[in-house]
Image 1 (cartoon, rainbow, N blue to C red):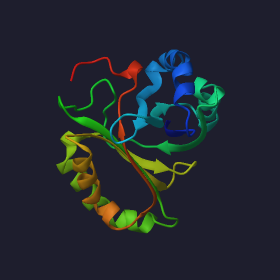
Image 2 (spheres, rainbow, N blue to C red):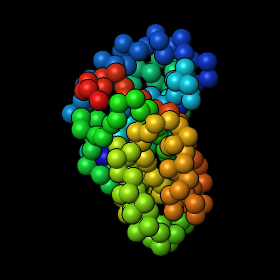
Image 3 (cartoon, rainbow, N blue to C red):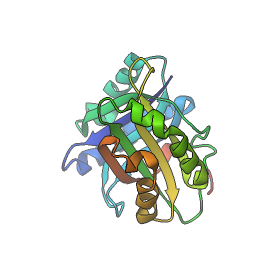
Image 4 (cartoon, rainbow, N blue to C red):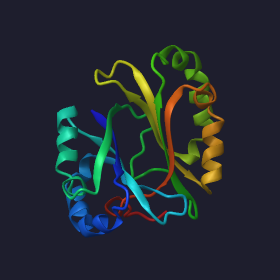
Length: 202
């Protein structure tokens, strides 16, 4: 099953991140076959890394939690806060074959719903899917965050390939789910492919 893992860097941890980067990259290489996408989310100018995001395949939540526990950035104190959700992809792309346009940047949207939002999701799902289908060339990955049982959607993930952050925000703000106010917690940041997972030409 697929998991979304969002991990936040601690404040003022850039030097620690540099210290543990080689071990972190070596660690991620061991999960190459399981990884759909992985990389850091950053400040708008890409001058500072703010955390890590990955979509990855594990047999269960315990394996996903162990993956975080063994992460060199976590062991080294760079990262101490994270969110794990089951995730169901709505498009088949991975870092190996996703749509990308030369000169574009990438962006991450991670939204967690208000409680009891499933009825709104059901009502707006067709319009939401049609909207994202119309912008498919800008969407590298998307799909709902799920509860632990996988029975109910509790949020959304998008990874975007866009000309700039304003274009990404405009795309997000036009989405029927977003316009409905379904999301309680919203994270939208510039994102980039991790060094281990950026091996093809755009």
